[in-house]
Length: 87
Image (cartoon, rainbow, N blue to C red; front, side, top):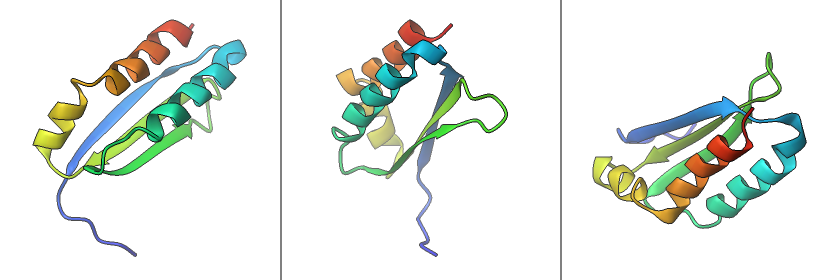
C-alpha cells in the first residue's frame, strides 16, 4: 500500500443524463490527459446506488496546486460538463 503525504482533495459530483454519459466520460478522459504533475491521483466513479451520479476525485500535492488548477480551462471544462450534461 502506497502512503501519500498530506495533500489537498477535490471532489465534484452530479447526476448526468443517461443519454449524455458517453459525452461526459469522454470529456473527463480528455481532462485526465491534461492534468499537471501536481495532481497525484485522479478518479471518476459512478455511484452503485444511482447510476446517473458521477464523482470526480483528485488529490493534489498541496493547496497552492489545487488553487492553481481551479483557475485552469480544464477545471472549468469539468464544471461545465457537469452543468451542461446533467438533468
